[in-house]
Amino acid sequence: MKNSKSKEDFLPKGLLPEKHYLILQGFFSEYKKAVSHTISEEEATQIFRTLGELIVKQINDPYVFPPYHQKVRKPFDYYAFGLHFARPLFDKSKSKVEGLKHVKDIVKALNAKENVIFLANHQSELDPLIIDYLLQDSYPELGANIIHVAGERVITDPAAVPFSLGRDLLCIYSKRYIDHPPALKEKKQLHNKRTMTLMSELLSEGGKAIYVAPSGGRDRKNAKGIVEVAPFDPQSIEMFYLMAKKAKRKTHFYPLALDTYDILPPPDTVQKELGEKRNVTFTGVRMAFGPEVDMLHFSGSEGSDKITLRQKRAEFICNQVKKMYEHLIS
Image (cartoon, rainbow, N blue to C red; front, side, top):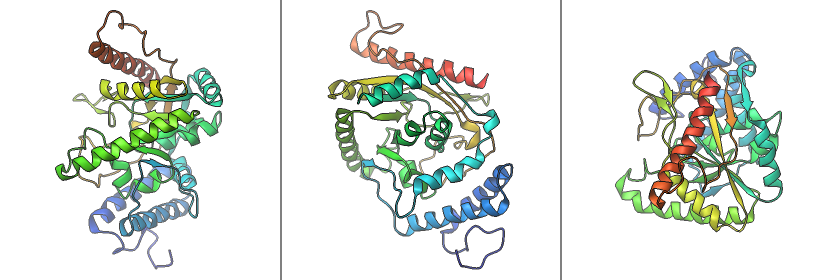
């Protein structure tokens, strides 16, 4: 920006509401410290100034996400900016991907116009960028084109929107926030129905890779300070399973485990108001792909009625993700 400012400023005061400015000021300080391992302070400041300008733009002229949002690359390339912002935070020497043999099968299915749904845990706002980054050396097109099922936070928080604009999203209100505020519940439910209709159309087109976190939110630390994979919601998995069965193209389900908590941890507790504090760290990021899930025949599925089967299916898939996650952090 052309406005005069000190070397320590990322944006002139007055362009943002005080609450947002103070949160971003803290974020800026953490970001400079974290990326000092990989880029200069001058470059870090310029990256953050761009983020600040995009946040100002969102506050002054909010972008309203449709049920199905496709990444914006012109006139401003939000996709490239997201990677540019996040890449200096990753310690490549401590980052890894496991289960690439499964990714080979996944790409083969996608090329055959079949679909893949990743049932995954979720730990950081940067997860879509991290998945993309970790696949850059092996399957860059897959990482870039995954459609992420996105909740309300990342499409309404002005600090998150610049990154969300750069991804392909199916926007849905999770059960956690659909009643907040109560007056908007019906509107949110109608939005979700439209999203489901569009998802059904995408699955029938085929060749779609979709990431969903059936927990409905990010993993958090337990009372002992240990990050736990949040339980998967049986109804969430059932919804995707039923939609996949109705689609004109075959859909495969794969478990995906992410170890990304330390790079940008969520608040200790779920907060419904927008404007959360963000702390970033220079660290390694890891993920693991598991073998395809047989949604009908799995350990514990024998002799179960429909409701019990849904619960056992969710537990089975969640346990698969937990095992992979524990291996990543071991």
